[in-house]
Each structure stands twice: as C-alpha cells, then as structure tokens.
Image 1 (cartoon, rainbow, N blue to C red):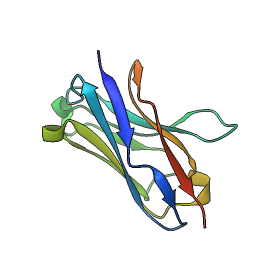
Image 2 (image 1 turned 135 degrees about the vertical axis):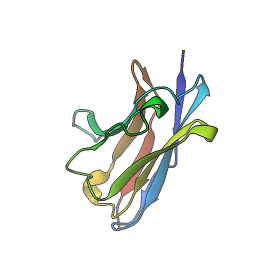
Image 3 (image 1 turned 180 degrees about the vertical axis):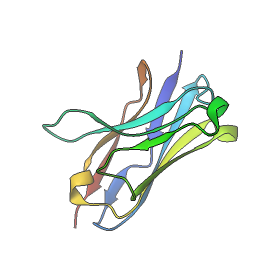
Length: 115
C-alpha cells in the first residue's frame, strides 16, 4: 500500500512559480511511474504530467500541451519524492493538484493563481 502526500501549493501571482512535492508516508515511489493531475472547479480531473520509474531511467516524461514548456516533473529517489516545478503560472492553472500512483491518490494541494 502507498499513501501519497502532496505539498507546496498556495497563492501566487500570474507569472509566478511554485514547486509541488509528492511524497509517500507509506511505501516507495521509486519503482513506479508517478503522474500529476489537476482538477479545476467544475471541470474534470486531467493529467498534466507523468514520469517513469527509476528502472526506466530513459523512460518518457510526458506533459499535457497546456503545461508544456512551463512545468517540469522530476524525482529525487533518495527522498522518495516526485516534484512538479511550475513556472509562468497563469490564472487558468488554478486547481487542486494531485499526484497519482495507480490506484492511489493523495489528498491534493490547492494552487491559486491570482493577482
């Protein structure tokens, strides 16, 4: 079993940056592909990025078109953590952000982009 914990959300002005973290209070993330999703009010949850497990060092890193070039996913295996660096944030990035290791979800962290 894995228990995922997201952190790092908050309120930021347009153009600003945040770094989200996805850790595991129980279990290891290292040998699994991890995805980041977000859900804005009134909208469906969408996947925005995914990183391969450490056993696939050259595995694909995927980004949704809406965040490509602005967001970067990475992992620190020693810390058992996956990060989502978010730059050039826009109001439309406002959402609850979740990390996912199927079938497990974290509780989410709120990101609000507003002036």
